[in-house]
Image (tube, rainbow, N blue to C red):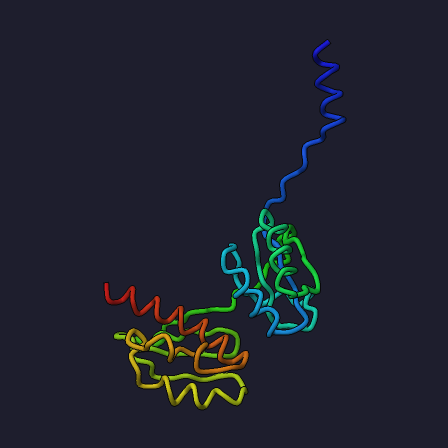
Length: 186
């Protein structure tokens, strides 16, 4: 008799399938993707380059844990930020592209994020800043080149000095280069 009740209970109260894996949030423009990263700082999110086949006009997307989707949607709605689309990354061919890449060249470390690059030497001195075509790139280069990345105060980081996508992606490269420099001092 109990097996009948178990079957009936399964039919009447089906278990909701828990979402697993990651998803992408697509936005109309870069400014919205950057704002979403700031708004969602208490969630496991990161800004990535979406695969070409799902881009909706913006070269950035926010990758997130599907388990957090409902909370993320509420947070975006609360902040009047409208996503174009939420996409599940259950298909292995739809891997987002990592924005930051590192390359060692003749004792120097080049960190690239998007089109922006920052190069440091073994002690963390910034020897080059390049890339992008944004109007604040020359200013960022002047402010950063020759400085030790470990001694740059927060107010002089690319995200606080610049105002464009180039400044944003340079800041991603800057953060990674700073981490690498810190590891080299241990």
